[in-house]
Amino acid sequence: MTSHLKDSPSAQKTVPFFRPDLGEPEVNEVLAVLRSGWLTTGSRVRRFEQEFAAAVGARHAVAVNSCTAALHLAAEALGLKAGQAVLVPTMTFAATAEIVRYLGAVPILVDCDPVTANLDIADAERKLAQLRSGDLPDSIPKDIRVVGIIPVHVGGLMMDMTDVQRFAERYKLWIVEDAAHAFPAAWRPGPDAPWQRCGEGTSAVTCFSFYANKTITTGEGGMAVTADAELAARMRSMSLHGLSHDAWGRYAGNGSWDYRIMAPGYKYNLTDIAAAIGLHQVARAGEMRRRREVLASRYRETLVQVDEIDVPPVVRDRIHAWHLFPIRLRTERLGIHRNRFIEELKQAGIGCSVHWRPLHLHPYYQETYQWRPEDFPIATALWERLISLPLFPSMQIEQIDHVIQTVKDLCTQYSR
Image (tube, rainbow, N blue to C red; front, top):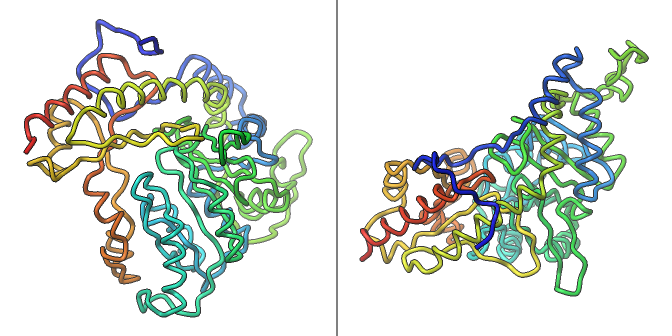
């Protein structure tokens, strides 16, 4: 098998969950920023926005300091208000729902698809029907207005966006994509259709993450992309205290010291230091995705033969970002539960994680909205089987083979 994987005689049988792929170009660009004397939002942020927009096929890109910030700005720009509601998957990280709460609105949680773990449109339909019939928890007013939906592309596998768009049109909802895992990724409705990149007009606003363990990184960072100039302008202004646009250049040699506060905004701008890393990361994003795909294929080809686990699906008409490689334990075939399996992996020097504990199983959403495990049967059952294995572009062949062999050995040892 030919691949980007390389043998390394010094490779240790210790495998971190993730390691960022950074090289001399990133280092040199950061040094150039430090030597320039201009560290905060400036010319490199603008270049990063332009190059990222080109990479995903978007008209406008607004760089911010996290995907959480991008999601918050998107919802605010779309007019989300207190007393409204948004459909949010329960199978997601905290940020997707908490930004709805930031604006005083209510996240109505939706179960996941049993195969992909992405938001289940059929359950979204059920939740809206239950809302109208008064069968959701009493904490959610029956007459609350649902105005939006925030799908998440779990692990980098895009949803069928035609399904999402048709659903949103039927119920007059805006769409904001949580694409924290999905750069670069693409989908198409069929083999004869053109590819559509995540962020290429797939929703009103698509939000990406550049956290340290994401597919590209700026250390901390995020991006909101959109085809709508007014949404972009609002997000840009609100990302820096709601100041007038000319305030961004007020310290430049040809800038004006004066500015106007247009709205009570936030402090979400990205620095040139972070953008210096991002410029070189986005240039290598395709290459790094292909390396992860090679690794994912090696995992799949070997672990698909193990009866005690299920491997992630490969869905037709998708270009998968492969941010994660989550296996699912077939617990009925194992005399060991997920948490103990993770401990065994850690003892073998293997870092791993779980994506995620569903939101409805966290105290805040249980206590605030009275969600119960039985309201989300798929996510409730699925999360107890999930383990995300290490996956990063610089992973060595000895490392991935150590993970594979350890998983196989544990399944043999604890097989029923």
